[in-house]
Amino acid sequence: MITGIIIIVAIIILDQITKYLTVTQIGDRTIVIIDGFFNLIERHNYGAGWSMFEGNWLFLVAVTIVSLVFFGYLFKSVSFKEKWVYSTAISLMIGGTLGNFIDRLRLGYVIDFLQFIFGSYEFPTFNIADSALTVGVILFAIDVFFLEQKR
Image 1 (cartoon, rainbow, N blue to C red):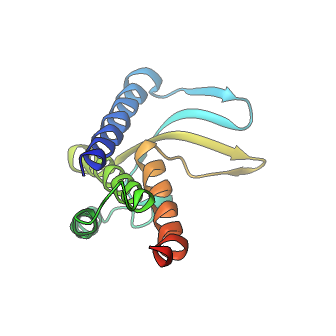
Image 2: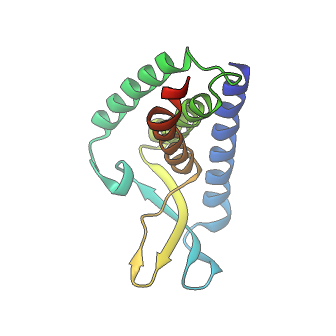
């Protein structure tokens, strides 16, 4: 369980530091990392992923709280010795959820800054918390569909 708490805290710290650096160092400009593919840019997301539910702050806060209660329930059964994929997944999902929740409560929106472009398609800008959530969901699915049966 200590390992899970360390992962959660590390995700929150990394997420908040990178968002702080985005606001203080990037601002209104775009920093091109790989021309035509990857940029750093400050965006404010007033919704959830892909700006869904934009303007529904109370709904997003309520969903986040329900999610955190559910993840907290799942966190009670983490065991990095017996179920490391499951335990890492839950820890990443909690850390990512809390990282974005801090923004939403503090600012009213979530700071995004990682921008990928694929030809004429611009993938929705995201952040470290979003990445942790995505990896956590993928690991959780792998655990549920492939590893849980073997335990």
